[in-house]
Image 1 (cartoon, rainbow, N blue to C red):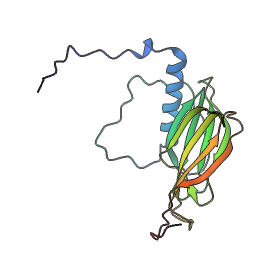
Image 2: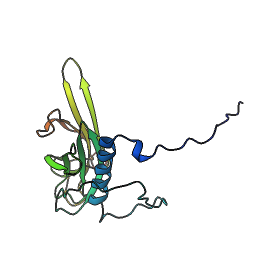
Image 3: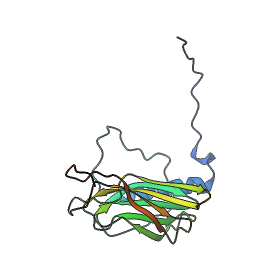
Length: 184
């Protein structure tokens, strides 16, 4: 067995060394997540929240519906913010233009299927294949707590090549178990 030897600890790069655009975009993403989940129940991870090296650059009210943010991802200057609410009044993914971090703007909304909400699963990928070239949003779906849903959950794929005009590619795929344990 070989022991590994570590050199001196590397200093973290100061925030001022990060390019302004990335610093601003990260700050807006963090601000959106914090602002939207301000009324959420705190997690019991045992880790205290930290506000060091965070500067509010801009903010945006996405909706008046009670709930929070389940996840946030960014692609090409647009933030994709999961509207998380198990009671499901307005589940889906908000598309926010953050290219001007001081003035973020909601440009679209990709709704979750009826009876479902988007949880902690918003991922983006640029695809280049013989059958499709563009940007794809993958979002998970969980059944609402207050409405009977046809099954367990799953995920949807949405074409976000034009972020202002999300187009569904597929919906509710991947989970075949119904809440009662039967297969669909």
